[in-house]
Length: 224
Image (tube, rainbow, N blue to C red):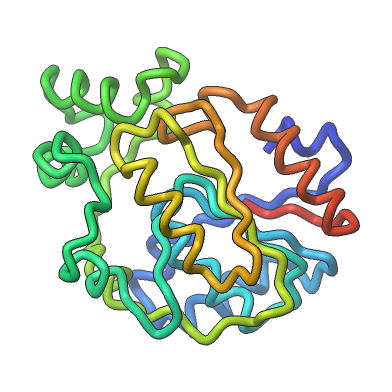
């Protein structure tokens, strides 16, 4: 966010996870949308699981564009469970094997093997302190998010998908395919050389990319 702020954007980081999981999705969206304080020209940026959340914001606030970064997305009226049960190869085998144990632990309670797995799969190209600084456990049931059907699209929105080509958790090939199914009349996905967390691995380059996309949308406030 700091890299976007110095480029002239007004940024708000929304801690959406627990609010969404402890409330009805639409009520959660209304609560979180208040944090935007009626800003205009809003550009939503969603990373990883936050990709499921972005369409709900777009239904309640005026949004100029959506940018998905190595994000989990679904098609209209489809849930993430639908995609999983249809046989989509969303996650890498290594991530599926390790996720259940890792997701329930905060950084302070990880075993050495779990730290090694996280470092290899998520933070392999990030600063050494990334696990300690940014990893936190999900103490709530994520199935609630997986069961949320994507609402009908607002066709006028500009949408972009940033494919992280060295992602070791969500298959880059699945990211490319998914970019084609998020309501884009002309699919727009950008290949970006990084692992799953480009905001940590290459923050300046990612900020430049988002800034360029914002300029294409005639500028605006960017929220992550």
